[in-house]
Length: 132
Image (tube, rainbow, N blue to C red):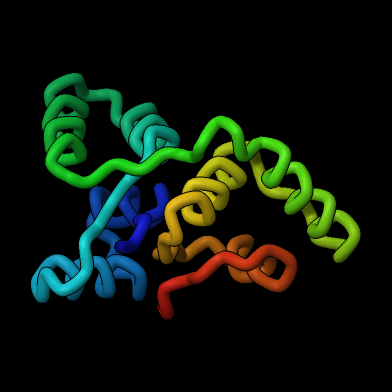
């Protein structure tokens, strides 16, 4: 199962033909791997849509996908990962990124993202990234 990051959904909705969007489209066509989203990803995407009808449409599409969220008991693990990144000299991502990372770790998910921060973080945190 692949957790599709916010930036990929935004690029798709805005008609950008990024490498990650093309991979998402291939995954959808082949239906070999299941796609999932998380609450934070849904929030980040929907907050950027000002038109209520379009927001409702996108929300309805997300409702058809599997949903995975981080386990609330994993906050201490997330703090350990943050410390590892800090020791590794990496700039720390926003809270939303940490929640996405922890969701992937908690559910053994691969992350599809075009955000280079995830590549950097993968040197300190054992996340699996879909090849873009």
